[in-house]
Image (cartoon, rainbow over all chains, first blue to last red; front, side, top):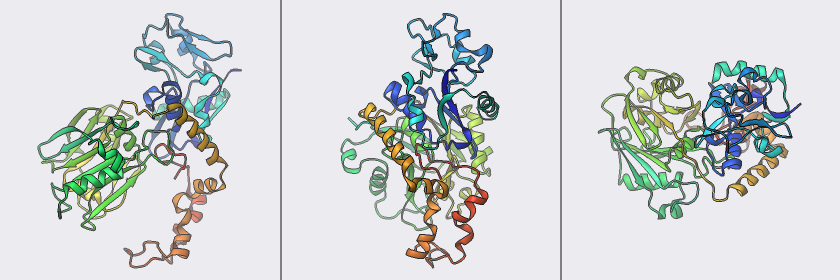
Length: 151
Length: 296
């Protein structure tokens, strides 16, 4: 089973260092709009880190299925990746993504690529709120329930 | 050229007109005053020649993100409001871990200066270089939390960061604070200064990037600090009890616990407000200031 970033919202403190690390690693700048992990906050008690599940539980909205140019595929290690050359920036994946973690940057779609196998976001989370592990259906379902309130 | 991580720009707002102006930060300020606290002190020092009435149009309100805001530096995520306090009549600053500091940097500013007094309750909306003054009359009387939620709803942006006063600031309570995302600028009664100026709230949304000088090295440092932090026993204790961790020490060892408006330095009935007492009983979860790994 493919690994992805699993979130444990009850441990998340809302510090957003994961967003900082992601944008820094991929784009050399600090900007939440360039991060593929997104932390949503509601009130005082809810902090919800959202990350790509690499296709687990995406259903009919799975980016790989909805891309009209076939630009989204699985690489040999199982990670879902977007081909920038063939991406036409139609935004369909961006709109359909159930976790809302696809970013449109300069007219192209970007998503979590697990940093080539060593996800940086996990390395900067002191609270243990995100984990690089095999997908947990229960945890994903709980996250989606929480999303309805927060996003 | 401003140093990496700083924009070189300040936003000056006059609530009386109302009007705004984007100004350059003088080059030498970065070397002499660094930013954040340093800039705020310099600005207040220049603008307040002798005395200024705290509750007045002339009293400047300076809002500065820390130099390390929106950069990969844990503990560097605070924002400061500096002004003349209605409580003390003199220079006063108050710091908060609200994400508004980072948002101000993402909007492209190293400092915000607000002068004047609005004719009617107003909230200011900043979206990068675009500044709007909006009618806050329907919000007047609302609590800080409700104000911030309502402004996000009106502006149609759930990720907008808002700082606001509540009924206390509106009524010029001398120790009123400014709240932003449930983290307060609590000292000096600066909420009353906002209230006098009819400034109900400040809403910011920035989309620009902040770039460290060496992004790769900055990320390596952040990862190293994270490891160090996680392994430290002090970190484990701090995250359970936060800054209240040294409540007992302040009382017993130092006698510096503000009691009855500083008439005393030891609070004899402190047991029930000690986090060692209430955290195990009432704590739901940990919350961190923006960009910091140390929660509470």
